[in-house]
Length: 226
Image (cartoon, rainbow, N blue to C red; front, side, top):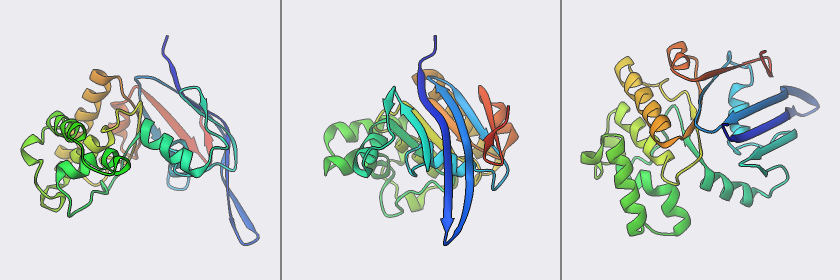
């Protein structure tokens, strides 16, 4: 039986602008199981990005329950959430968000080196292993600004794995890539999923990306479509 990795119950998110309130998420229930690749789809304004940010502990819900690895996360302090996020979650963004004046190796190592206060030998070794996994061992000392778009996204994928996360959130990971690079990125994510049993939740507008996932979750007007 697959292990429940993340459980979200009755997640509501309301934004307030002065006296005006806008309810973006309207009671989301979602269960993610270990080892799956799940696509999250929805039109612009449906609440997709808000849900991804809440599940990734980057934003707090207005109400509802969130559990990761059977650990209740609701009510934790900002510091505790940040620490938990860094230890258990990984992130891949559409625009990769690399540090342009850092090398590929330094970018990959950063989520582990920053809390440690330095780039240790073990962290360096792990970063080099991940760069090899994504096919960029020969680019480890290139600055991020010297890499192509597809190479930058592969560095971002390696960075997301540096702390051995159980769950990786990918927000439109192919949205800024040409077709060939997009196919390579998706093939890489699938290989990592199968070989390392890493769970991926991939927000995407691309139906070909969704078709390569095990499940598709659709959000419409702040609710999960049945």
